[in-house]
Amino acid sequence: MQRQCTNFLSRIASQTTIFPRRHLISRFASNAKDAHLINDDIPYAYVRVVDPVTRKPLPPQPLTEVINNLATELQPKKGSGAPKSFVTQYAQLVAPPSEATDGYALVKLVGRREAAAREKIQRLKAQASRRASEEKEIQFAWGIGPADVQHKLRKARQELSRGVRVQLVFARKVSGGAERDSATKTKQNVLVDEVVEALADIGREWRIRDERKNMVAVYVQDLQRPIPHKSMLAKQAAIQGSQPDPVQPGNP
Image 1 (cartoon, rainbow, N blue to C red):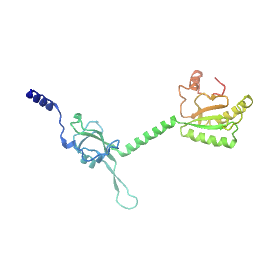
Image 2 (cartoon, rainbow, N blue to C red):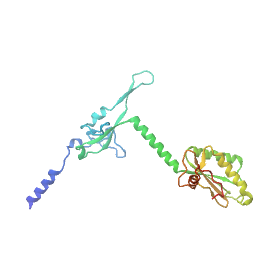
Image 3 (cartoon, helix red, strand yellow):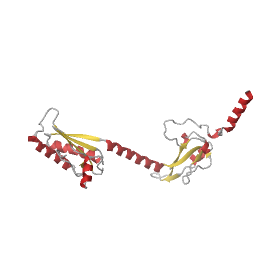
Image 4 (cartoon, helix red, strand yellow):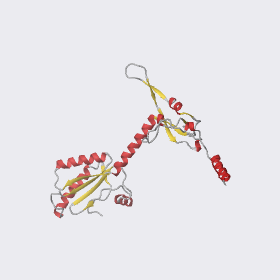
């Protein structure tokens, strides 16, 4: 029985791949907060660099050799003095050691300028995505004065220029005000139309206006953004074969 157990353990040991320890031992503690380990933070003494052309790993080499051979360029120094050497690449850890790479970690060489450009594009896309989901509410009291209207329009223009949707809410003041009855409805509709027309060069309505007893809400977005296909304005335009037009209060 003991001999059978010994033979069984021997077979398991013979099927287990043991990588050389020299390239698996951490050179020093890495920063766990870093999303991608680069250069001296890579905790492996020997690595394989991914060939940028073939996308295949090159033969193993010391990490220090990879770092020492990173591409550089000379930059002129302000004033007098010799040009300064600037490292234009960095080595980035792609994958830890594995059986597929013969027990070596994979790294790739990244151009600093290209990486900075990609990060900027990603940052701008993220900002645009956040702005696309934003919507600012700007309130107009029915009895608002001309100066206050201009102030509200400037705020609306500022948001629309940033790609943020604007919700123009026309309503009574919290402290009270004129009721939206038949006697004042026509005059109030004129105010709504004037405000929308004042923004026509920078924004357009993207959904049906919301009209209630004492309130009208108008939804405006910048001209560059397409009208959502689920919007009633887009559906009406598709039926009519034209661009969506602003819908006046009271229209179906």
